[in-house]
Length: 138
Image (cartoon, rainbow, N blue to C red):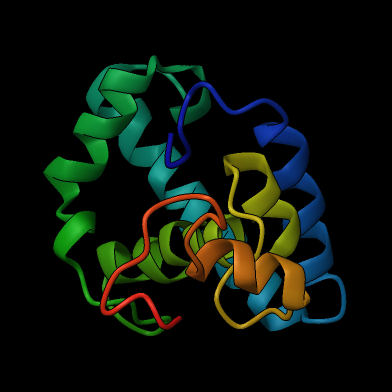
């Protein structure tokens, strides 16, 4: 639901990331499970199905009705804050700021990860044969 639908490998990425992120952190894992269970309970109450079994539009509507998009991420806060903390923000961070997630969406070097001089120069310097700005001295 959070990732672009045209990205291949989303499910595998989330499963691998979630397992690695929670492996040695039982309290964090419990928080993720509780937030997911509560989100699932809301989906069942409002739509009669588990969150995962609903179509993308309905899942999006549930998150918006809960106010997750404007909630403050807080592991100790109300359910919307916990969903934002454990499920939404963490997965968005992983996807757009990790090397593996970045590759899925075409971000070669997420901010904060070194990528080598070639990648840096490609992203910040004009094409050698293209027009140059300024006075032409480089």
